[in-house]
Amino acid sequence: MRGLVDKLKPVFAISGRASRLDYWRAQVGLALATALVLTLTVLATQAGGWLGAVPCLLFLPVLAAGVCVAVRRLHDRGKTAWWMAVFAVGPYVLSGLASGLYAGDSVLILAAPLLALAALALSIWAWVELGFLRGTRGDNRYGAEPARR
Image 1 (cartoon, rainbow, N blue to C red):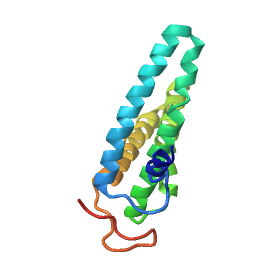
Image 2: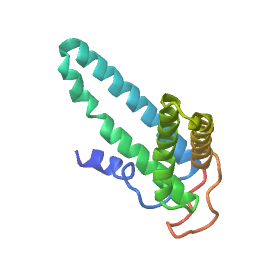
Image 3: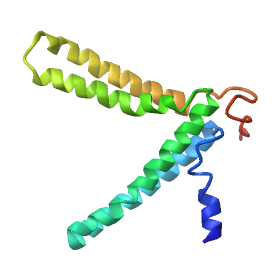
């Protein structure tokens, strides 16, 4: 059990930096973990209805690991963890405002497509920022440059 805890400790760390390769490796692992949890949830739901809620709880550590690796990736880019809030919540807020304007009957309905486009642009920016742009060279305030493999 101790060995498993030691292996999972870096996954849930928010301090330090993560290279692009570390980020993409984590994303592949998290996608596989999500598929496994989703499969278990469907099977448990079919077996016992409410039993589907039990494996569904496993989404929480998967989500936490995703946030942690994204924060470390932002640190590698020289950005604070607050950017994660912008990237995670911003598109939902903008698209929610857009859908609210579509439902209304006002002149503001013309702003709805612009808000939807802004939500899409923010999502694409987050994807590029986290997955494709190079981290800062050398040490920064979040730690030493991760090994580039």
